[in-house]
Amino acid sequence: MKKRWIKGTAALLCAAFLCAAGGATALAENGAAAETETEAAEELTVNTDAAITSCVIAGDKNTIQVTAEGNGDMANTDGYLYLFELKPYESEIGSRTDYAAWANGGTSASFNLSLNRGTASDRLYSRFVVAVLTKDGYQEISKPHYITNPELVAPNQNPYKAPLSKKGLQMEISQIGDAFQLGVKHSSVNIAFHQILGSGIDYEYDGKVYHFSKPVIESYDATISAMSNKDITVTAIILNGWNPATPDLIVPGTTQKSNVFYYMPNVTTQAGFEQTRAIAAFLAERYDGSNPDYGKVSNWIIGNEINNQQWNHMGATSISNYVQTYQDAFRVFYTAIKSTSANDRVFFSLDYNWHNEADGQLKYGGKDIIDYFNSIANVQGQMDWGVAYHPYPCPMTDAVFWDDAKTGLITNDLNSPVVNFINLNVLTDYLATPAFQKPNGQVRNIMLTEEGFTATNAKGDDLSLVQAAAYAYSYYLVDSNPYIDAYILSRQVDAPSEVNMGLAFGLWSCDMSQPNQIIPQKRRKLWEVFRDIDNSKKTLETTEFAKSIIGIDKWSDVVPNFKWRSQE
Image (cartoon, rainbow, N blue to C red; front, side):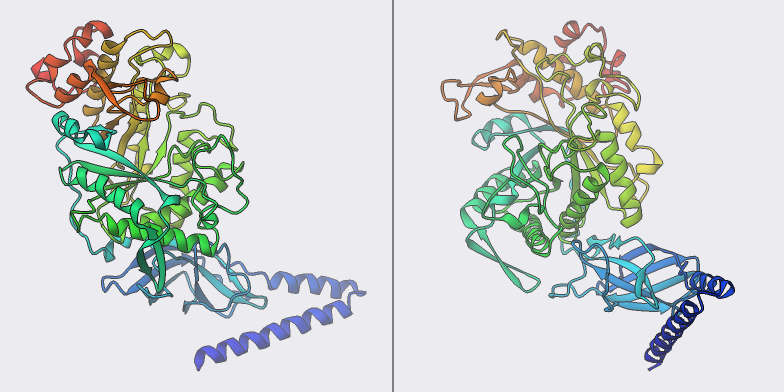
């Protein structure tokens, strides 16, 4: 009853304010009255300001606890602070009056509300804003803030299983026996986000039933379980292609482009958010490791090389709008994943263009993406995000990366146009600074998830020894860098389409007479180097040949903190 009385009082005050304004207008001919009107208008100004400082699930796993701090100026309000819930597709409260919680006005406030997990009113994915009640209705006075600890409600609390080495490979599942012989510790699988809806598998989420394609899902089951059941750490790359059958998965206003491969996931509409959330939750649950027939995904990358819209298209826009749109979608996946398996890791992906090629509308510098992503998260709720980086040689058609400075695109500082293997410390040193550390103070997880070295050139010359030397040098650089968790080489077998572009990346050459298939033909020197590179007893012996190619006497001369220095 007290709250209703306060609101009634506020309404009467609003009426009084309006009467006062009307009276001032009637006396506008009088200069003194006009001055009084201006003073009254100034008196009605709302200067209340607040910021949400914490938004977490409580220990009971059923309550959301929100704390806020503000300037305590409650003039021209009813004296209370109100917490509103916004879905990711809602940008403001508008004329709404359905606040979720309230608190007494002041310089600090706390709110408790139900999580409603597993119901149509589920708040796990929501963001929250603080508002005040004025004569014009409810007015937002804070930036939105998401829940930052979805991992608390995860059924799977198993620790992250760290592989024995950083050695990874983009595998051909038909060649999995070869991969086991090579001692692969990491691998990746592309999941076509836009192709998995269909029929055969029904999945209920928050009261709605979604339908997934049984043959598509079972093909992923076979691939992921084959790897994870052999202790290979699996990284899933979530890709959203164009599919006319699933228009809600595309950001409204986006048009299909012939030169675009993938598109920005859509959570800007209710239908897009609900479908994306269901797909994310389904994948997180399917590959949580509880069923060996499905397998376990431990790392999740949302999109590919997002600093270039060719791989994550939504149309020309500013970097601030682009990163905000992406981060809202990223959070949906992040929340689905972390609320299922608490210690899975979630990443966004960048190519090697640190500043190079950025136009601010369709292409953005990798450093700027990191900066904007982090600054938005600082306000709206930090996450345990990581970076999946692609430090290819520059240009990609030349395996010799140690002379890339001659291109003018490589320097050893934050202004470097390109960051690749030869100046990889620019990336890792930057992310190691306090501004980018995880909420727990640790350096964020970094993986190298796509990079390779060609074994041929435009003339078709055999440069397989150079390819193997480049891999040895790059692997030692990565293995000796404490901030990098994994190095997934592209690829096990050449792809004919890439070979035609001068990119013969494989440990095996391929049968070019079958251009629509990937058929291994002949092992390269790289195969042997890859197999032994993380073997303490064989690593230096197997890479001895590379020193003369690179022009060095000792690896420790060019590899900072070289891991095997004591054995040289």
